[in-house]
Length: 145
Image 1 (tube, rainbow, N blue to C red):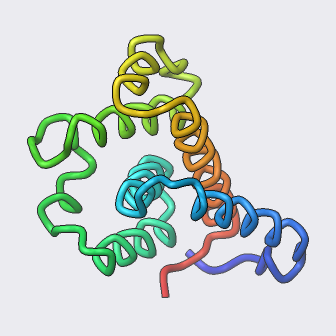
Image 2 (image 1 turned 180 degrees about the vertical axis):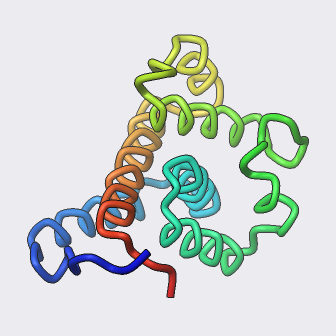
C-alpha cells in the first residue's frame, strides 16, 4: 500500500484538534500504560498498520512486556491483564465495534467497578480518539516508518 495525501499537511486545523484531544488525555489522570493498551487494541481491530506499529513501540518504551503485547488481541483468554484493564479492553472492543456490540450495560457496569465516572468519560474519549486516528491512518494508507 502506498501513501495517499499527507492529511495533516492539508488540514492543519484538523491535526491540531486531534493533538488537542491527545493533550486532554495526557492530563486525564489515566495511566499511560492503559492508554497505550487502548490505542493498540483499537488499532489492531481497525487494521491500522501505522498505529499498531507506533503504539506497540510506545508501549514497549513505557515498559510493557512482550507477553502482554503478544497476547493483547486475545486479552480475555489470558491472565496477563488486571480486572481493571480487562474492563477497559472490553469497552474498547464494544465502542470500536459499535454496530456489532452496542456498548452493553454489563460492560458499562464492569467499568464502574474499576473506574470513577470521570475516568469512564476519559476512557471513552481515548477510544474515540484512537478510532479517529485509525480512520486517518487507514483512509490515507499511512505506512509504518
